[in-house]
Image (cartoon, rainbow, N blue to C red):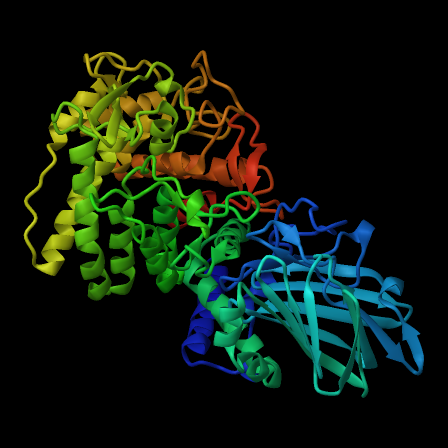
Length: 640
């Protein structure tokens, strides 16, 4: 075991040296992403432009993605591109590959699958016809440009495709084809200079004039004409030096993984960490329309905006391996901070879809502080501190109905559903009996105070104090830890609960009770009582530990969204809370249960939004970013 750790450490050190020295393609000794084949299954062949899509390979902030073709519906080219914002396929396969060898033409439909895989940062496929083998590799160079590398032996290349999108304008210019889409996007493809290109309606074909072993084709996508103009001659530069740009892509991914992976972890746990990185990066989107900064979406298959508390979580882990993206994710939410300090629920590329009716639990300062911890960027801290302070004050001005220093979730319009959204737990059992009370003309609260909200505010208060000290500015606000801790703790039942304004505890044992230990607000005595609740198999020690409500709750439903399923952020709060109070052995045991029992988590199954606590079965949205965040955090904290 020690020898394996030493060897793994040496590889990571060598890779980090290579990355920081800016090596070219010929000097890359090892592309460690090749150690993680089939990291996620993205094999799917669309049948029309509206075919469902449960996941694609996307990277570098691009708004398009690709899949490997399904082996039973083989196409000799990567499927797509898939337009993520419009949730539609532009083509079945924009580059279907055939060849001419020894004067014989082999059309794309004659090739049969050999192998295919999704590696971090690379989509790969191999196909064959008789003794001819063709390999295809797809790399995202930046948010606009994707390189396709085709490899065989001594062939002339023949590629073709048909655009599915109707009412497009197609222009041919020497070795380049440009397609103006009805949505306003622009798609183009550029071939080597020796290629001849023909266009017939919505279809094209291109053929090389000379024999070669390897060529590169450049696919470019722009959200609008402005992006196309701004990219200028960049596409020509990339096509003239494709191997250098592929090397840069590989270096970027090596950099991600060397910053994420631990040398002392089993390979199957490494796969979970790598899959988490892949999930986050595949959900990375560049600025578009009313999204003024880049960021990470919850799931490119289902949730296409930025949500506030998702964004704080994404930024916290991105700070370690993609810090500029982490900063911009935070900025993207503060772009829509209201005059009175509120951060709205979610924002989209079309602002008419934004939801200003509620906020989300306050974890922004937690994320900003981690960015500072990882980067020591005082300028960023100065930028964010007054905005964070304004947001913190908003809670106490607009969500503290009786001004007792203890806050409630609520909404701007007095409706219950947005108030539930504000908690992040949209249909949680603890809110079944909630009513709304008016605070002012634009602020309403639940008639109950929530333990998780006030635990987060306690944490935020401590972090703002740290920031103020670093920036040498005054910060006088305090939160009475003992008051809040004792207020929400029921000494009879030994657990934390929400409370009605009349003082009655909401008798639901839910995951909100994990937060006082995660934020270190809980007293040692109260934490010891809570741990006894954790240990009970009819409460929170289910097959996958820490369900969103205890397993013996009468209204528990295994697939009931926030009424029973596992949510990995809450699992993390529970496990990390144990670690905070010295229960490291128990925390490691629960982490192992998560890593070994979640269905497909170390295989090629995508990471899901939530899971069945009694079986580990996947529920709801795949490719889910915040689940990936908390798997990474569990990975980093395991046996530490």
